[in-house]
Image (cartoon, rainbow, N blue to C red; front, side, top):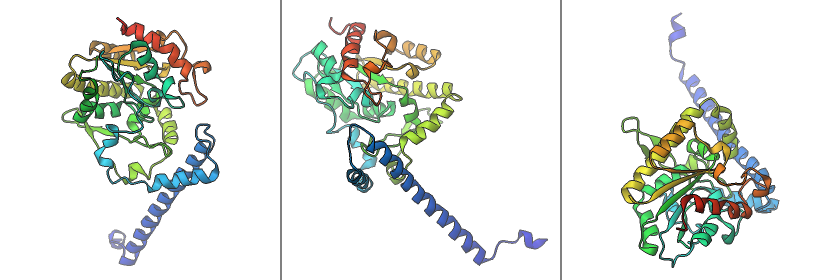
Length: 327
């Protein structure tokens, strides 16, 4: 009986270690293969890229080889050559800063078809579009906490912005939990954890796993959607906490700036209690009910569900009126 409780012989230990190492190796290989398969079939069918097989493979290899040595600095959230041009930079009116994801940046649109262009055209104000594909509320938090962000925004026209506008879509809920990047357009992930003692968000370091060896976003988002119904109230509360953290930074650095949240689609709404608390905290809320069009209508969407030029042409005047930006 005593033999049952004795440690295994060295040869047995070595065998266990080898099995574990083999399993780790196989899992890593599986992740790489799954990454490529999903990436390949996604991008090869995307009208925006029109990539042939060879170009697709080359772009994947380029992604895997890209230098991530400076990732922990998060500099690309502040200085990014892919940002949209600043509208009406010479205007002396108070500026507006836009935050968000590809909806705000304008995936599939020319510079003169985006939300920032339409807003600049209607108000003649400087418009800073600081959104990027794949981003979420955590990226806005990083920017509002970074002193260099304010240098970039204020130095252009020497004035604080009158409005911050964040366009929130339903996918932003999952992006808080899934800090991954798209292969064909790395979204420069920003991932926070919540400190249990201070209840504040702390930025986590990026690493090789989060930047390269990671499942493709749509796969994880499908899993998130399965769990979302069960934990929807908790998720909404965490989104609310992110907005409050952003509001806190705005009050410190831009005390006179108004903070607007646009809830672009029906599923982007938070719980009734969270929406009420946001208003009580000083946020101006704009919902799809204010747009006077149905943003889910195919007439206002690109084939991949992003807003088309007509959507922003119709929506932006309603936002201008709601915020009284022409007065």
